[in-house]
Image (cartoon, rainbow, N blue to C red; front, side, top):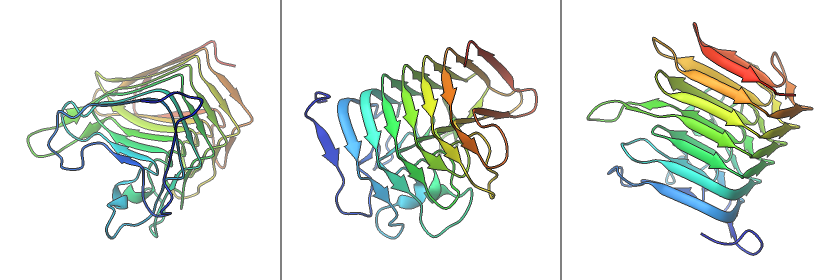
Length: 239
């Protein structure tokens, strides 16, 4: 916890992320980060720093109660991606890679983050189901009053997520400008947001009162790209 004006945590070794929530994989380890800038994460060392799991600045989730909450956080100039190309683990989440359970983002800014080599989620990658020993863990993602600017990935330039029913994705009151989904493998879909309703039945999404401007998708959906059989998406009052 810090104050927005004077607290910055910078990774300077050039090959690692800044935070890993539950390194020992014991569960029941909720993490809240607030009022701080996180910058310079560049998780590319897959030999000793477990960057094969993604997350340029933060790797989180995976076990019960390993929730992540970001409030008044600035995440800038973070990146991830090793030698693998495409939809592979070490390329997820230029700033944050999160698996279930719940991920909450409020009043935060993501700028100039990159998921390299065609990876998904230039700012944020969220997988709403994971399967550790002991049974599946599920979760939802909520993004409120936040800004995503000039983030780059292969798919979901600002945000990339998957959710399963009855869990949800909620994005409200946020601004997405200048983000890019420029991949071809995976496809360049969702310049600002890529959403996937996995499972039977699929999860649901509510996307409302957001601004989308000047985002770029190499293939489809400069603002939003939603996929999933019978995926229940409500999008209102976006412009």
